Length: 451
Figure 1 (cartoon, rainbow, N blue to C red):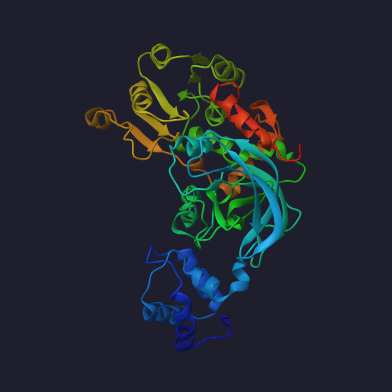
Figure 2 (figure 1 turned 180 degrees about the vertical axis):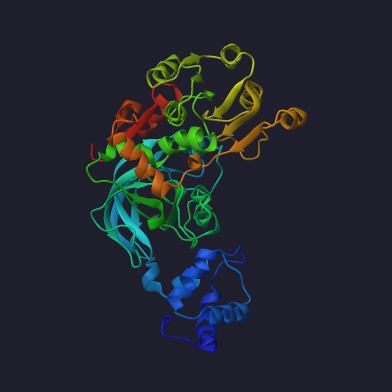
């Protein structure tokens, strides 16, 4: 069944679309970007499109599903004949397991990548530990950098040969959140944990099974097919094995301080948890001009690293840190408390809330179990002292712009990246890498796929 873009009669469109509707998922929320895409592909006027939607009387996750269902050559559900070695989490997995998978060809708006490097982020451990609960099996990894090998129809952002960093938060550029400058909340990220694309399908397969892609990426793989909304073209003279950190840890931490936290010249900021995100919150706060940057982490190696990258004080316990902040600020408290621990719990939120002074901001960037209620504070203090508690996704940044900007700061010597990489690993050694992360021996580990 092929949907001709020459059709302009609403009646004809409805007749051709009705068979496709039968195979669509059940009703779900509307998507402005999908409707705009569908209307463009149909080449109908706004009035004809409104009549069409009224006639069909159905809602769907992405209206583009209709076009894909009616144009199988765009979806390309078949396998590209390309194999990849990937680290996956199975249904009852207690560690990452290596599997040889088939990678689907790039369909409409999709890109086929060969990964050069992947970062080891604590969030992927949440899949193994059950903190993040989603569909399995799934190819883990959400911090990756590589080279575009091929592109599907309709791709405009990149071309074969381009060097790219994958953003764990896609940015379509047209949904309500992207259109209002909040790309870190892009609607395309709705199925990040389940590993499906907006059309409900998968890009990894093996032995009749569908494998999800964490954050629509699955970077713990030699190759992947991803949405063009998930890739950012970067300068090709930059080393991808370093630029890979821009996929998650660096922008998330940097933006936690500079954008979400709003650190200003002369402020006092405190950072809880010095991992791949927290260390970049330190760099962001220093760059923004904070007078004091106080860090809290039980691991001595991490505290020492933070001091080397600009932190002014480092403590093993929040109680010691709070006492020092009180001394440094003459009892006024910190301006920002940035929570970047690996697993968020109630006590760290309470510590952060207590350490900030009047008008202080608590930014929660770390993750915890979704069903666990981790924020219990005094509403009276919140109101009378005008404190703020806020969440931050991807540092509240714009991936398409800020990843390039931060890499150019690195290129100019203004941002430390090489110093963040403690060790390199082969994909086969991924479980050792995460054992090192659990033991607090690394700030960031990086998998080199050709090593």
